[in-house]
Structures are given as structure tokens and as C-alpha cells.
Image (cartoon, rainbow, N blue to C red; front, side):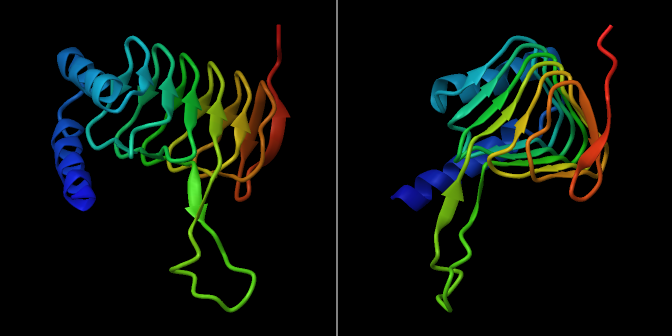
Length: 173
């Protein structure tokens, strides 16, 4: 029975999240996450077509967030996205990962590790970035396109690369 419910949820989300980013459709998308999955979605969140947020619980999105086309967000470990954040095309925000067993046990049976991802206000995440479980990204940070963020990013810092490294601090004037 549980598998059937998950499949139906996937079908509904696939249809809903394929709709264009018109204001009315974004309102429907937000309402679905809020009422059926008990998530918190702020005002004026823009979901481009093809965004995939699954399973959809444990997510908190602030006001005026822009989530571009084909963004993938896994929420099992919890995800918090601050207000006025831009998330670029094809970015992945992952809050869970497979456990690698210490011995020669089978990887398939080793389970998952869940860690919350926190993204503060006014963050810009470029296209094709990967944010790994447990990462904290401080207010005003910029993540350059194609970066893989494996460690916390301080506020008002620009990072780039694989793994992401500090390029410079933003001027706070």
C-alpha cells in the first residue's frame, strides 16, 4: 500500500511541477506542498517547470525564492532556504545520502544518512551546483556555477570549484 501511495505522489508531483511558472500555477504548487506535505512555502516563490522536491516534507522555503528549471531537492534530512534566494538551473540540494559500510557489507543494504541543509537569506546559487547533506550556506553567499559544496560557506563569501573553495569575501558597505 505504501508503495502505491508513493507512486501516486510521484505522478501528481510530476504533473504539477511540469506546469509553467505562471503566478496561479506557482500558487497551486505552493499550496500542494503546504497542505498535503505539511511544508512551509513562503510568498512569491517561483517554481520553474521541472523542479523536483521529494519527498517534500521537511522543507522550509522563505519569501521571494526563485527555483530554476530542473532543480532537484531531496528533503528527507530537512532543507531550509532563506528569503530572496536564487537557485540556478539543474542545481541539486541533497539532504540525504547512502551510507558506505565500513566492512565488506553490501552497499545496497547499508541505509541512508540524513543531514539538514540550511541556506540563509539572499544567497545566489549558480547553475549546475551540488549542495551536499549537512551543509550550511551563510547569508549573502554566492556559489559559482558548477560548484560542489561539501563544507559550510560563511556569510557574504563567494565560493567556486570542486570542491568549492573561497574565491573572495563580498564587500559589506
